[in-house]
Image (tube, rainbow, N blue to C red; front, side, top):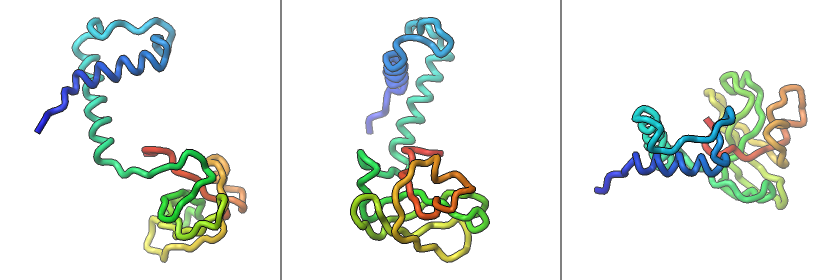
Length: 151
């Protein structure tokens, strides 16, 4: 079995980060060269690379279509729920059981409790901010895509 060179991955990640931010650090100065980082910082980037590789192969993955207007049968989505029914959380995962065209779907809600899973019908797409607003009764008729690798 081939072992990953995580120091090379760390260096590649550091270079990609530098490219993404235009070579500047968050507080302004230009990033220093990899060779000048020091052992502790290079090891930190290597550890980050190891964890990214581990996460890529061990975390559950949800396929998210390019547009919110493309739900599909069997997809995981998020829906708003009563926190009292969901171990204190106002958002729960659900599985799409029917697509009605456009962004309208039926789902089976997976609650974090011993309660019977809920059926929700004719839900339409909304962004995450709308879904999480507790005072809006309309949110119970909405769904959204989970963000990739949301903690």
